[in-house]
Image (tube, rainbow, N blue to C red; front, side):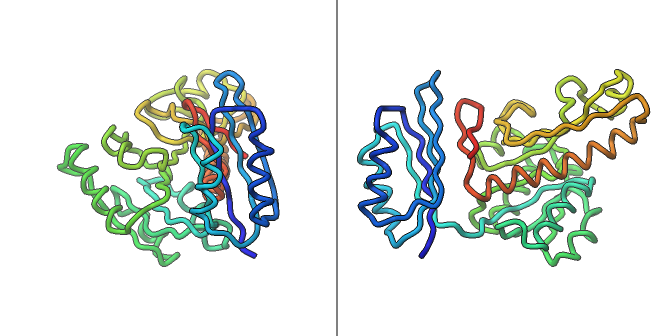
Length: 278
């Protein structure tokens, strides 16, 4: 039997779990897993269910939507590989980690392309038989460069996610709007305390005791989009700033891949610049 993921985002009201489960029963669907959460401050109900059976997804969406508020949303998703593109600049650690996981079959995705404003990473990407497109920013203003990047992305059809694998370019509101809630970024957790050139050296000079990374969806506030995943590791006075940088890159790889996996498995709800993750 096929499995389906049901994602529900609704104003909260009494009996929702019962009503939704009753529909599953009426359609002879077996519940494989079920998670729900109520944001009491905003009276919001979130539910992610995995069911197995034979159904018409659109018909099931209509049945569930009928019992929910008009402001609710429901999606019945048949799991399949999602199409993603990776954007990179010069650093290889985050990009390389994703490519290795992809080659090992750990990511339920099709990587359609890697796009960069430099050609430095093309030898790495070519080992994985994935298209590599260089869209240079030289002699282009930011908007013109982004138009070229969007043109390259659009050539691969509809994309489910765009992953910024240390893509060191600030995106304009126009670009973000084109891919709302579809752009996943990774950054070191020193931001915003250590902004600008060489944040690890700045952190070293302040004597920090932990370093980490944050993966988040991109919005128009720099590095302030809804957080998907975070991780930290302890350090001490014996670390040089280069030691901190190496450790930080390890954490960045882990956190970015974790966030991408959550997105690919339809486990993330975005609400009020925060995420609910099942």
